[in-house]
Length: 224
Image (spheres, rainbow, N blue to C red):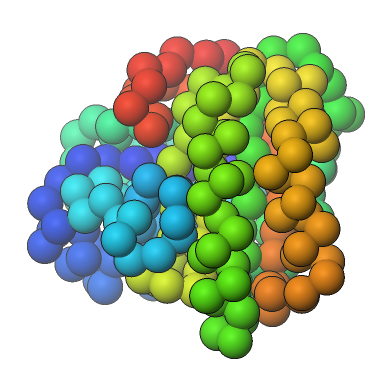
């Protein structure tokens, strides 16, 4: 399994147009088993004021690398732009939870601290819990920015509110685990998530990085 994630810089109008018109084409592309079109943001408050109207992207899951190669050269991908602002190909290490009712990532490699890893966190926030969630988010995102071993991070979303997440890239699995389980702000968020049950759906997945290149969250990245 290979997960392709791509981001492009473009006008807000073009990004909104692609989000409105390319969803079905991406879903039906040969070899794609799961896909999402993504808006992006700073990932600081997970509210509409975080949104970056000039960076848009996609995530697509393939079972075969040959299908990904065809996808990369397709007119569908080129409709976003000739060269992605950031591009990464990943393979799953672990995945827990659901995304739109699916478990899209099947782990195929053993957990390892060797080499760079990526993480996707994604949640559907209950409307009744949104205000509490937004109040608790800033300490976590501030601690993420300064976390040792972070190569880059960006907020991702399928809608202006309620369907938010983060894509992050790390020097190693050890650095990612140190943040996830050693950061006081992140530990508090985990405890509050359990206590308040503020998600109706959530997913956390970790990946080995096959290739990654470009600018992610303002940081230049070249990893493989």
